[in-house]
Amino acid sequence: MKQFSLLIMVTGLLILVGIGLRVPNPIFWESLEVTVTAYNSTPNQTDGTPFMAAWGNRLTPGIKSVAVSRDLLDLGLGNGKELYITGFDGPYVVLDKMNKRFKRRIDLYFGMDVKKAQKFGKRTATIYWR
Image (tube, helix red, strand yellow):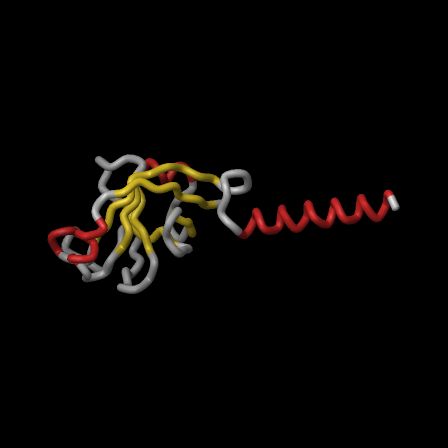
């Protein structure tokens, strides 16, 4: 009977750990509270190549991607990294970098929908990655 109870406990623990590795959480995942803003592929918001990201990735409207402030690069949020944002369906992929003046910030990519990006505004959220 003790062996059966131990087996049940170990199985339950393995299930919880497995779920924790797949679902963003502060125990098994890195997390950070950041400012979240939005940007578009328009010439006045970019360097003149509106669909080309900082690492050379092509930005495609409809793809869930973000730009990260450069201080987040040192935390492992570089090109191609997946992250989750509280309150948003994810994952999002890091495809772009922001200007050096920004800190602890991510920019959600809204393609060409400027009105939707403006309506989004500026928010605070927790991001998760591993």
